[in-house]
Image (cartoon, rainbow, N blue to C red; front, side, top):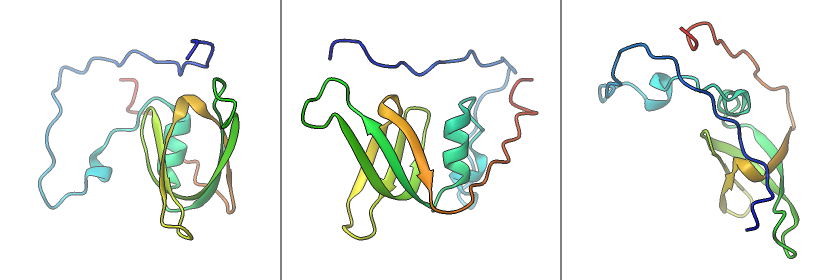
Length: 119
């Protein structure tokens, strides 16, 4: 890598003087996860289970310069997207740093509530 690639911006978290807690066994991890401050990550999380095409560019690769991954959104994190292809059974872990954009085949959920994120 030559360092000539896009860096995801980071934002400082507001201090609320509380420590994270482990959810009880009967509560799903996803429902207790706080919304991150990355809007793209939140949109991908809100649309978990939907079919997408993820357009990715690897600037330092001659063989894989531009690639399209098709599949179902399984998970999304601050620095990654996981999609699975139901036709092949292959799962892809895609670093957000290489993600250009995502196409959805249906209407997307976009209701992100930041009201308690910046307290």
